[in-house]
Length: 173
Image (cartoon, rainbow, N blue to C red; front, side, top):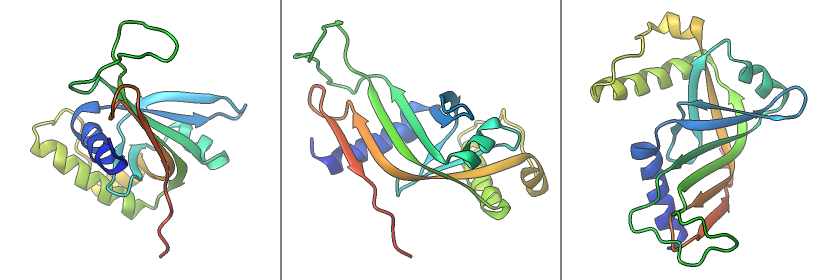
């Protein structure tokens, strides 16, 4: 499968199937810390996050903005694993989208705009369990983060164990 076709399939997988992401930051001792969170993949492969303002990861990003966001899910329809490279575990490889990047803490107006857009999308789909916040509550209780992508890896979107990897070039503004 060519890279552009794999990119389209991977973006669709993240947005429609994968659900939660695994987010990895670096703690103050230099160790990776991974937790599950909601993360929204944007068209330019950046990632938008809105989370509670008290999370430790915010301090971790202030110290070291390098981060990894990963989505993993069921094998693609029609996937095969006819020629395992090292071991045969009698399973099909899962799909994986891994975005390595740099975290930027965003201003309140960005956080409110992303929160409004995403909560509106969720509510339109009938997902109403999360509390609905006013703009003032968003500013007081939540923090917005944009992950600027550096490298992206896709697995499970091609033939057998084919993977795709590319460097994301920052747009000049």
